[in-house]
Image (cartoon, rainbow, N blue to C red; front, side, top):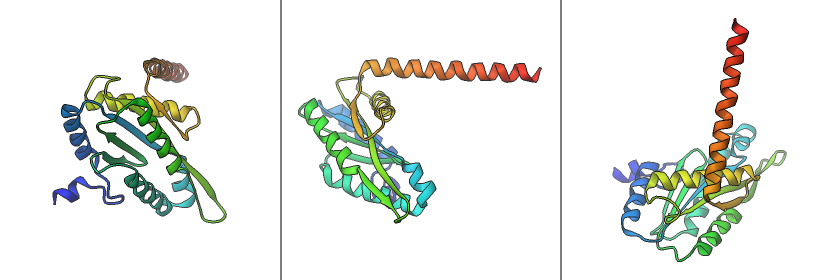
Amino acid sequence: SQYQADTDLLTGLTMRTAAQQQIEEHLRTDEHGVMMLLELDRFKSVNDRLGHQMGDTVLIDVAADLKQMFRNSDVLSRLGGDEFVVYMNSVPEKEWAQQRASHVVRAVRRWVGNGTTNIQITASVGIVMTDMVERNYDELYRAADIAMYAAKSQGGNRALFYSPEMLEHAQEMEDQRHLTSEKVKSEEEMSEL
C-alpha cells in the first residue's frame, strides 16, 4: 500500500521521499516555516558496542518521543540511519523555533546500556528558517545540514541556527579536505615512482 511505501517500518515515521514531497508542498503555500535536521551523537558506538538491536530500540524510542513533541501538521521523517528531519509550518518567530529545538535536544538526551557498558545519546540539531535561504527543499536541507555539522563540531548535544558564516567555514573545510587528499595522492604517486 502507499502508506507502507511512505512509512519507515522501524519507527513508523515518514520516509525521505514522501517527506520531501510534503515539505515542498508546504514551501509553496506556507510563509513562515522552519526545518530542523537532527543526528544522534555516538549512535555508532551503540551499534558497535551494544549491538544493532539496542541501536534499533534507540531509534524507535527517539522517534516516539519526537512524535509527541510535534503537531500533526508538521512533517517528521527518518531520513535513514540516525538522521531525522522535522519541518514545522506557520512558525511565529525565530525564538519559538529555538525553544522547540532546545526541547528536542533535551528530550533526546538519554543513557542506554546493558549494565556494564553505558553510552549517553545526545542530538546535534541544525535549524534553518525558510526566509534564511532560497525557498526550496535542497537549499533548506543543505543549510540545516551545515548547521547540524557545526553543532556536532562543537561537541554535539546542541541546536544551532544556520548562518552564512557557517557556509564559508564549511567551504574552507571542504577545500582543506580536498587539498589534503590531493597532497596524499601526489605523495602516493611519488612513492610509486
